[in-house]
Length: 122
Image (tube, rainbow, N blue to C red):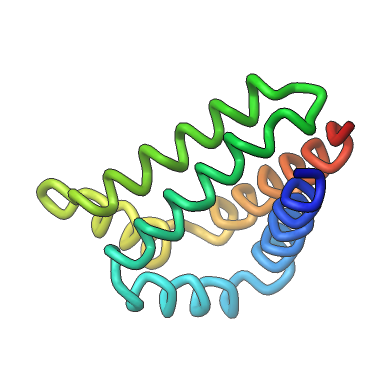
């Protein structure tokens, strides 16, 4: 279970750093992921949520990781159902209309979460 948490931590840190330093290129990568299809992304989000829920026991704060996992599961369900194309609108705003500062602030939050996650592994 620790390996899963280490992998998540490194992915979050790498993604956050890319969002901060290479914001335009990272937006393009995220756009290509969204173009892959919301149904495929829903499966990825749900699997990631389940992995976080199951791996949470290897952390100092399992309750926090389980909550994050539940949010990821909820995102997966919302992506799959996608009522009134709400997720498409959210992704369109984040990838097309959000300012550079907003995108980089999200990267900072992602790096902080990844660093916290790696420090919480038992």
